[in-house]
Image (tube, rainbow, N blue to C red; front, side):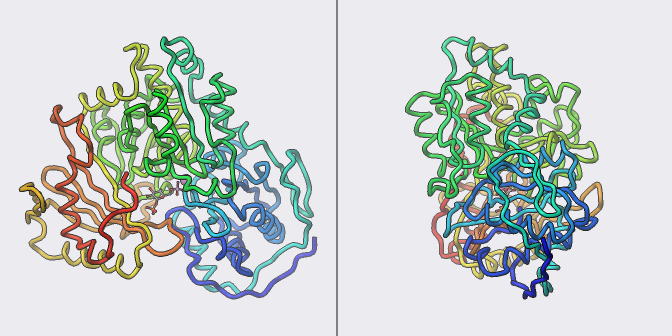
Length: 560
Ligand code: VG1
Ligand code: CO
């Protein structure tokens, strides 16, 4: 194909956020918009694009096939030599990471806006991952952004569209193309990590048999879930639902939490299902939910870390270290302490875990936002977390026949104490008001008498003494890079915390996230609803931030 150079002008705002560039489909469909960003990736990728091999795939959302064709043509014009694609451009985010690593490619391009809704009027996204399989670090994403600010032309090869529907090896102009089944490489990785016989024997040899429900929320993990739960573990078809990937996720929000995964929650409660789980649009998030039992993501990663050596063959040789994102509760810190392991606190976003894993200092980590994973790949991994939980239940049943999710939770809290945690999301706020609220908090923090002051709840006489308050900054212990302004936190003397952040994954407006955490070692509190225990802290957070005044919102859209 002949290479054409097309003149273009920069678009503002092509700055990758917490996880890639996410905008409305209509924004990506503007003439040259997608092309500019794709060209910027090839221009800014480490070591240049010449002769490189990349994995390409995504969650199958609307505009993915069109974007894939554009990437192939611009890639060909920029000297990329080979693309490995998932069939129909489908690959879960963890599967892309696994393919990059097992085929030792130079990186990958992911077509996803994760848990954001899809369709002609919803979101699309493009993310670049580097050769370790993880999201590009800030240095690279800042480089991409810089190119988009001054771009004057892009190169594109005149090639026919590639038929994405057939697997096999192909040639497209100068490009070598391999189209793979999206599931098989990932499935064999999971089979190396977990003891599927152990899980199977728990599922089939326990009386009464535990029931399972996996919900892919019409996202990309449907085929992965079917291959694992039905084909590998021999569960009935009724144990998976919404497992056909849809370009608009069936019109719903493919985010596995109590609000958006209500179809799962309802069936689990109605049918007394022992083990329920869901993942998000691109498959990197997970929710664990059994009858009457919800596992907070902060507890989930702590419990996986606690059981890993016992229940998961991959960790038999020992755990290197643990980590969490800053807003995630400290439950995992307590497990680390008990096991004598290093634990790291990094900013929000999976890209911050990669260096620690590459350096051999991190095995298991998680985020409060339903993200859990390990160093088997460099992305969080929803299906991995779900199979990890089944492994824990299988192992727990050997010690205590009939043990369910709640038994595992209670045992954990009795041993380590319980971190009550909740996040309030105020979606669709005006950016100006949200920024003003953050500025207001920075001013409050800056006053010399803030540390040491006492903040009072509004509906009770509870009060909290401020130990410290700051804007979270992180220095990467491996490469020394510094990331500032990663969220405003107040730590209180009793160990409780309040955190404010603005989301970096939205496609328009601002989302304010408020996180609250309180640690308890009082057994009589373990059964409490988190919202009850956290009420005084939430009141303190709302009054100190003047959130209602700045955002004009009296309620969050989502509470997790
Ligand atoms: C959110 C979560 C963050 C997560 C990110 C990407 O970011 O809070 O923990 O890493 O989404 O997850 P933000 O900036 O909106 O708070 V995914 O599944 O969207 O790739
Ligand atoms: Co996701």
